Image (cartoon, rainbow, N blue to C red; front, side):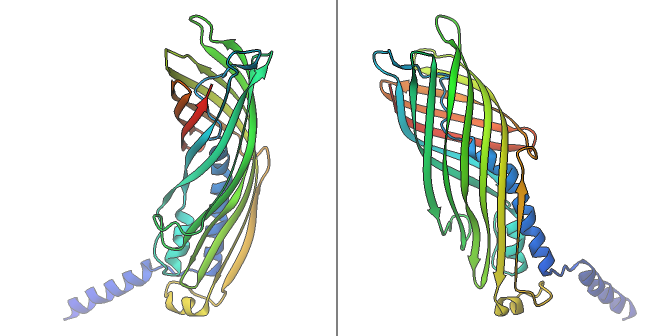
Length: 299
């Protein structure tokens, strides 16, 4: 009996020793951590716009036919969502995946240069997924993005030579990621300004164009987070201690805080006036993957 009592006492002690109680400070820290993660991730998402397999699409004038393109583009970026998942676990409102595939969907246009070998592109889109049940009930994301870039061809791809271009771009990405379920609301509003320079190399073989490039990305990001929980939810969440039922804060990243070196590449297929591009990129400083798929009418 003494042995049994000792074993039961040890089990009870162990359970208490490994149990975790959470306070408002823990919730605040989770959302602060997610803000920092987003300040690193969103510039990568912003760069997944107006990606073309050709390093230069040609001139609009003088040219017959004039070279331009218009279409739709979908990009995805890996986002570490675990801090918001911890908030959901603290208040016992289900679970979230550790990794969220952050989407960007844009309409875009690119126009060839006049006389000189350059082209310029523009893209813009607003989307609001207030309830992404495929991720988790109560999880939502909305975003607005706008921006453009210009590329100048150092080599035009004549004969056996490839196309090589240098480019500069600016994109703005803003929106909100939120959790709103069973008396718990938590969200992060974000605004990211992204500047980048790039070099791209491509070569067309009949209708197939492989390409590779490098970007140097600078960004300025602001995030504001807040959370609130009802007294009833606090009472039902045994892991939460204290009586605080709300919190807020912000995080900022200046132009010099997060320089992002990014390699990108992929291929394009063009048949008549229809073009399909598939590409990916990797931020090897923060280990963030991105992907991009686009379909366009292109001359």
